[in-house]
Amino acid sequence: MNRLEEIKFYVLSLQLWDECWGDTEKMLTDIRGREICKQLIRSVGSISANIEEGYGRGFGKEYCHFLKISRGSARESRGWYQKSKLFLHENTITSRLAILDSIIAMLTSAINTLEKKNSTMIRK
Image (cartoon, rainbow, N blue to C red; front, side, top):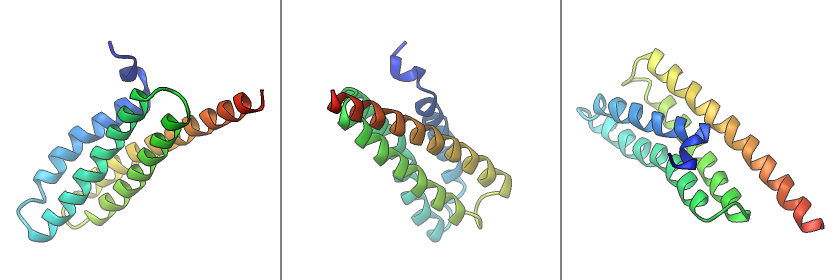
């Protein structure tokens, strides 16, 4: 098993990707829905992609930087799911927002931990 796959917020980001794929299927029949789909696919896909890229670069400042980008993508995805209310069932949106809130909270915690660790290393 890849150690990246042991990171909870990464696993959740992949789960969200799979769910997003199905969600966007429902929006493709409407021109307005297709525009939301484009943005949603990009922002949700960016969450896991930036975690992967940062992880691949090691655990220094760059990893923290990519986690911040990932968190920004999660927040953007939150907004696109909220804008999907005319296409998706309320329960679906509530579920996706809960996953995104968990990802955002875990990313924030990881970022704070890494920043503290990096600042401690600089002082030494």
